[in-house]
Amino acid sequence: MREYRGYIFDMDGVLYRGDTLIPGAVETLERLRRRGRRLVFVSNNSTRARDDYAERISELGLPIAEEEIIPATYATARYLAERHAQERIFVVGALGLVKELLRAGLRLVAEPERAEVLVTGSDPAINYQKLSQATSVLLAGKPWVTTNLDRLHPTEDRVIPGTGAVVGALQYITGRQPDVVVGKPSRLIMEQALEALGVPREECLMVGDIIESDVLAGKNAGIDTALVLTGVAKPEDVERSEVKPDYVLKSIADLEG
Ligand SMILES: [Mg+2]
Image (cartoon, rainbow, N blue to C red; front, side, top):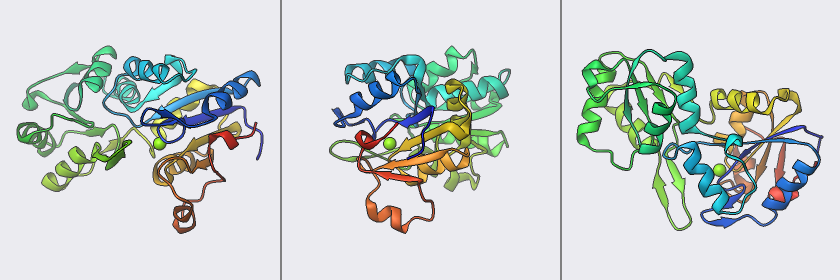
């Protein structure tokens, strides 16, 4: 394995699964830090604000600061603040997403007819009314920004629908596709991670457990990638996939450097 100065870690399936830490995760992070490596952590989570997410991570016992975490909620708020700062935004998403958008100073509206942008995330309270409202924003031709396109989230004992439950419904209803995806595999969240690292991309490694999300995100951003087998991807997935990681590791504990 080459030497890297910066590391971008996916979290779920790499550092922990559900409430259980992956053996060696804490030690690996501590070792990389001792060697002066820069670390940042990205997640497609679209339901928790950054501080709430950081709290959960520290409860798990991981030595990670809030400023090092970039969840899709936070990344989407930053993207919108750069590109749609003055526009009225209609959100279909969880409270954690709303919290980040408000924190970024964005203008949220409850009336779809006043909306200039639609933002979507995973929404545990999705219902027919919200879909109708989002549909009217899209049929009025307004831009559509989504936190991610994830269909599923594996949890410890079951699989739950992701943002795809909202995005898929709206795509089918309106025939439109999201104009902008912020989360992995988009390079937008990766560019934010690179900026936080302050290390040139050639000297960074992306570590994740899903080929179509983490490894592809690394490739899209021109960053080397390591796939760990402690989460979603199985060895046979690597053989089948056209997208090949630079390294395949049994777990984060096997990370050198
Ligand atoms: Mg993961």
